[in-house]
Length: 445
Image (cartoon, rainbow, N blue to C red; front, side):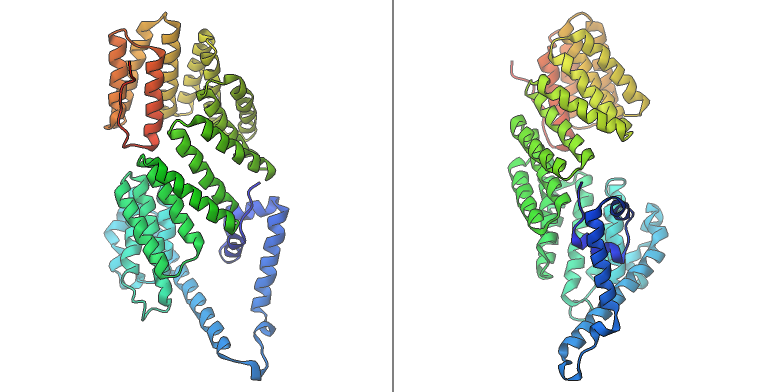
């Protein structure tokens, strides 16, 4: 089981989060630590805590009072921004029309915090809206004067947060050079604010993802390693695991399947110690995928079946469908082509039932490989290749995905298609999903 850090629990006492509340109901360790946080908060608010003999009163009293005033003002501004910006944040077009950064009433540190949080939540669902939110936060925070603002030097930390969210949005939009520039700006802002190592580690992790998606694997791996070391030192287990998983993913993209497998196995051992069954299942299936790519279906199959049981127990239909699809590749590797064809056809039906169009396309590629290996139904192979090309084209693919599929389609027409050519295209398309700048090269003859 993954545990929350003391910082997460402290923030939860100020602004509750549903996922942490649910975790506390199940985790005795985090619940006990959270109780200690609450007791500390009670002690801080008790009158006696802040009572000193008159002869011991000093400038410290004034400093503490000033800090409490800052915290109180920031909390008020944040609450007001949540009330006033909430309806706009939820609607992209009205948000653009309102142009909140030009409205004097929104030029507050609280508004910057609310806009950054909204951008973070929107980046996967609507990255363009997330970019607009982050840019509004930037426009507001750059209007602050450090010498005059009540936050002083910490306005640069707010600026760092805004630049970080801009980088996240650009990453999801595939604008990688601009994302790296935003991360550079965020780092400079954090350094001016004398930021803690955690903020810089988050930037390293994000930079690693951008490098990975830009096909700059060496730099991505270095960032992942550095971020993981900092997360480990600060006790942030969840982010440590994510940084290590990025490292494994980078290795997999380089087709270092043995190295990626070893990384996934090391993480799996840690997840098992922490009792996190779901994460263990994900890591086990990732390691098993590496085993399949290494040609070891015998080792992969038991791990996949174990992961399948967990996903079925958790009623995770899409994950169940994906594991069944990977299991269908086992007989394909073992040369039992009729069994593989039957199971892959069943997987296609399951993916279509669940609306998993992208997965269905990859299952179809595996089915093409099985049919080519069996060598008895070239007409169906040609039909599937035409369908795949049309599907990717209809989805707006303008990169080398169409080049790869056109190569496969022409190979079926020329009757020169082989299982290895299908696998080559499949591996390329898998990498292309995360690294859209890759270029397709036909396999060497």
